[in-house]
Amino acid sequence: MSHSGAQATSEGVQGTPFVFWVPGPLPGLNEIIAAAKGHGGCGRGYSTLKQQWTDDIAFIIRRARIPTMRRVRLKLVWVSVDKRHDPDNIEAAQKFIWDALKHEVAGVLTNDGWEQNGGVEPIHEIGPKAGVWVTITEVEPLPRARRTRPARKTISAEFPPAFPKPAHPALPGGGLGAIPQGAARNP
Image 1 (cartoon, rainbow, N blue to C red):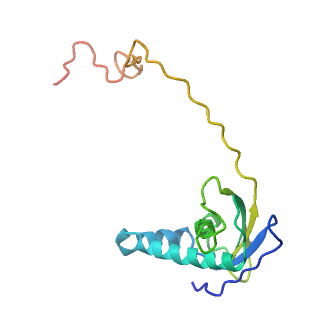
Image 2 (spheres, rainbow, N blue to C red):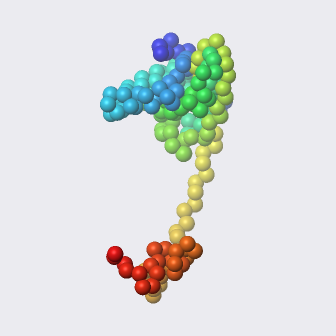
Image 3 (tube, rainbow, N blue to C red):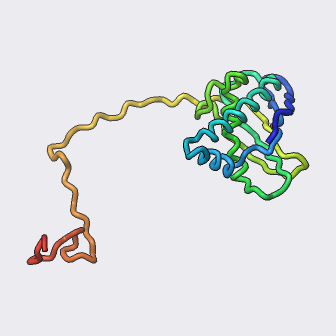
């Protein structure tokens, strides 16, 4: 799991895509779940795993000299040495990449929520070394949603409202829980 010899390169200037390589294999969903269940289920293993990978990826991003951006789209080219892991299992590690982008060391994003996440394009390939090529492209910010004030609700004369009894064909009387006339309620 050694990934300390990470390489980073950047292309172009601001406004063009920036590319960097994170050597792997990165932990998949199965490893992440196993870490979360370890240590008696307290999540300490997951916390350690997440912190280690987030820090390492943040330093790769810093070395790539990627500028601060408002909203980005990621193209993730996941490279595996074989087909032993399902693509959806492998993609779970994108959480570490998004967290690294907002890490104080990298400083590319202020957060990784809806306003900053412009989407992800995952691609899977087989190659001699496991890892992921990350291409970061700045995209247009989300348009500001115009807030409209909801119409005021008026309380009707009938409060709470009367609901019709649902009909159920299998029960006598047609209603849910209907008791046939003449039957005792509490036998």
